[in-house]
Image 1 (cartoon, rainbow, N blue to C red):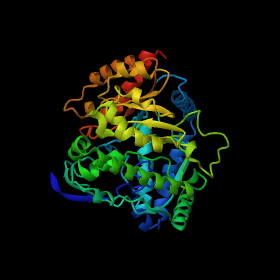
Image 2 (image 1 turned 120 degrees about the vertical axis):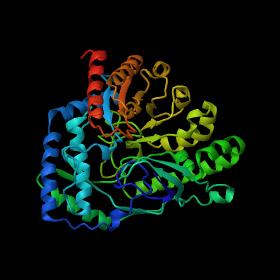
Image 3 (image 1 turned 180 degrees about the horizontal axis):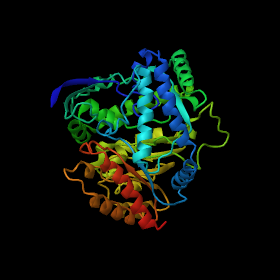
Image 4 (image 1 turned 180 degrees about the vertical axis):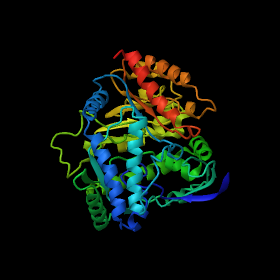
Length: 450
C-alpha cells in the first residue's frame, strides 16, 4: 500500500476519449513519432486481424440491433463490457506489447485490447473497419489541479482511493475556475495522421477524429476540488455559494464547447463509441437533416450528464442544483444520456424536463421494477449489473445468472442495453469475465426466447 500526496491534472492517454475532454494528455504533443520497420510489421499484422473481424456480416447486423434499441423500436437487450481491469487480463501473451517505440506501443495496446475482447468477451461489441488518428490539442484546463491523498492497492492498477483537499472555501476561490483555452496543434495532428496512414496503408481506412463526446459531470469536478463531505455540507448550509460555483463551472464548460465547435474539433458519435456511462450511440434520430461530416454541428451529437454526488439527495435538490444547470448543456445536443453510478429510479419524473433525453442509467443500486414502469416506451434503460460479483473470493456464476434474470424480467418491455463496467478486479482470473459474457447471452436467449 503506497500513500502520499498526489496532484493530478492530465491523465488520459488518448484525446479522442469522451472523458475529461478539456484535460488532454500533453504527452501526445511531445511523443516521438519515430517508428521502426519491425514495429510497423507488428502493427500491420494486428491491423489485418482487426480488418478481417470488421468485415464480418455480424457487424452490420449488430448495428441494426443497437440502432433499434436506441431508437426505442425494441428488440433483445444488447450487451457491452467496458472499464476492464486490463492489468489482470493477460493470458497467452495476448496483451503483451511487442513494439518498441512509444507511439507504436500505444496503438498496439488499443488494438490488442479490442482483439482480446472480441475473442473472449464480445457481448454485442462492434468493430468498424477504420482506425482513427487523434486530433492533438493543447488546453489550459479549468485552472485548478486536483489535490488529494491517494492509496493504491495494486501496482499498475487504475483503481485507487483518494481523499480530496478543499480548494474552494470562499467566493474569492471561485475565481480560480477558468474557461479552458483550446488550441488545435494542426501540424502535430497531421504528423500523427501520416504515421497512422503509413502503418495501415492498404489494410484499414485511417481517419482523423476529434472529440466524439464530452463527459459532462461538473459536480464530479467540484467534488474533486472540494471533497464529497464538504460539497454535501455546503449544499445544506451555503446554498448560494454552491450555486455560484456550479454556475461558474458550467459557463466554463460552455465556453470550451464553443471553442471545440469553432475549431472543427467535434466528431460524429452515432457509431461504436460510448455515450455517457452507457454503450454505443447507433440511432436513427441522428444526425439531423443537412448533416455535413466536415462541419459538425452540436445538434447532430449525443451528449450526457451526471451528478453522482446527488444520488442520495431529494429530487427537488437534484433539480435545483444539478438539472437546472445541466439543461443548459444538454439542450444544445441532439440526444442525451443521463446518469452513471447513482440510483435514479426515483427521479425519472424530474428528468422529463430534459427535452432530448433518450437513455437513463440504472446502476446496480437502482430499483428496476420501479424504473421500468416509468421508462417503458419513453427511454432506453442503460442497465448496469453488479461488477462486484467478479471480485468475490469464490467465483459464483449462479449469482450472475440470478441477478440478470431478475433484472431483465423486471425490465421486460423496455428498450435495454446491458453495460458491465467498473470492473476493478477479477481476482486475476480473466475467465470469470469471459463466463459472465457467456451467461448474459444465455439469460437473454432464455427470457426473450430467440
